[in-house]
Image (cartoon, rainbow, N blue to C red):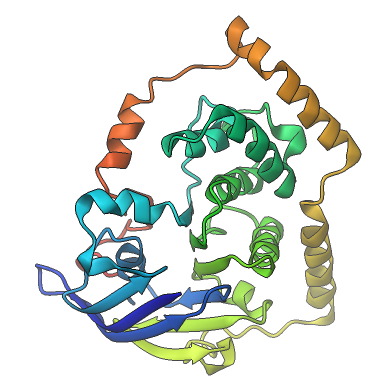
Length: 311
């Protein structure tokens, strides 16, 4: 459960990023958060991940009152969050398998548990036949699915996706949102921050609209004051194309027999490949240092951060 209770955030430069925000999200909900640049979406995410604290108000996530967390408790709180970023944030010289396994190693999981769970999530996102590939050998949509698998592997209670379709084509965008919908239907809370109003319109889910730091609508997209601005009329050809896209997306992540067999072979040969030097080893000390710094803003879409972080 997530509660923002009378939450306001003012930055040192005077920017009022959030203004008396009240949001309640139940366990297992699927929520889109929409709004223009400067609406307060990034600040909402930073507070939700406990990178920032509100100036006033209370935030409760999965039973944790975030303003009361000690610094050493923050990494443990974040273990219940799975975070998916627009630019994927995959480690380039690790295979798909190792990128996902690394998320488990960070929290000290046993290798026996890693070898059991990683193949399961790889299969779940439909990448069984890509387990031995490196990120530069994947399409944008496939890289985003790896990022999603990494967020899932530690059984996060909440998946937070920051513009997850921003760097992929429309067909892949449908695929990613449909996959998140499938994950949500199995009980995981999903929160998606996005500018893609046409995409949001295709999924009948709750939509929270932020504008200048205020919650101006909370319901379906038709209740949002932005709906007219982004309204699109579909002709019959568009509707047929959308049906094909959704059908393709719905089928995309169900593995075929060959991909499952390929994953099994990969699991058998993985240790041999490591011994032979086929897989690239990296020094993870720098990665751990970054994780311990508790800073996540580098992952957020702050390219035009001229207003005190109030995207």
